[in-house]
Amino acid sequence: MKQKRVYIIHGWEGRPEDAWFPWLKSKLEKEGFEVFIPAMPNTEEPTIDEWVNHLLEIVPSPNEDTYFIGHSIGCQAILRYLEKLNNKKIGGAVFVSGWFILKNLETKEEWEIADPWINTPIDFEKVKSATHNFIAVFSDNDPFVPLEENKKLFSEKLNAEIIIEKNKGHFTGEDGVYETPSVLQIFSDILKQGK
Image 1: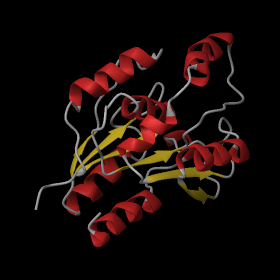
Image 2: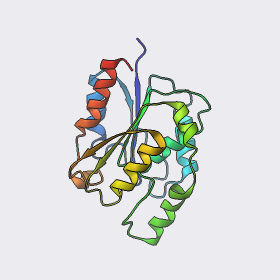
Image 3: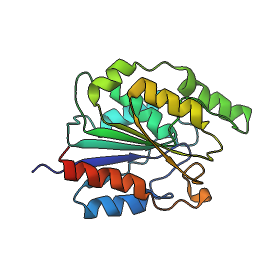
């Protein structure tokens, strides 16, 4: 059996060793997955081109044994990467605190960085042609990700299954989130179903 690979893509100002990423990596490796947490470029000022090109470079030939887990802007990077795959298929994608709409950014600079990510259109038909397995995990008290609007968009645009957690904030270390059992469960189910 071919080994399943998982790529965990951190968010804006994120690092591979942050929050729940190391925990999830070690748990998934115990389940038999090969897990990568790439350090994304220019994480203080992420741009679509840099991040998508980096993903195309490190995952040039994905297949149905390839899965992605994104956090925050990492979810956007995965979507925009999938848009460029040209009929290659992946196993699925899990989005944690993913967003199409943001709120409560603190500075003008932050809004300027976020603006292209919010306003550059995504071809969802192309994204969906890469896989049918999308799951979006939200917290009911995320200060940056308006729940109802984003839940609706992930559901409408991607037919994503929605999971809502209680009091996890933006799923960061500052929110005290160092484990994500619900995401681990998704991958345990994938193994059981042989997806």
